[in-house]
Length: 184
Image (cartoon, rainbow, N blue to C red):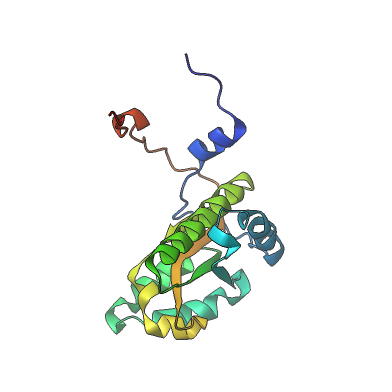
């Protein structure tokens, strides 16, 4: 018999990636900082805190999108303009890259945990988020626009906006189907 799910378990199961259907409501810097101040409590080895953030607010979005689309081939620019114009704001998450593989992987795990924390916290406030890792995150021209330095990696663009319609859930494979029991 399954017990009742905790509020946290319910939030984890109810959260959806919001990819479209954003409203015009502004994502404020105050809201963003409130969410990030809690999200940074993600586990991170040696408390390295290997992250930093670039916030593209609703008021700065149009100018940013125009610079961003110019990094794409001319035949793709209108499509990308439409795509990047949908979210109300962006949070670009940047990670310090460590040349040592173990530390690099620990840093990536920490930043990924932070992003999950952020998504869950945003969901509680009816702020939709989708974590995007499209090819432009590797483009040196995009790094220049954002001031991303050598030794840093864009882990993702978080597209954000308030929404009215919740996408349907997509089932997950039960953990027991993925679990192998070790035996001597």
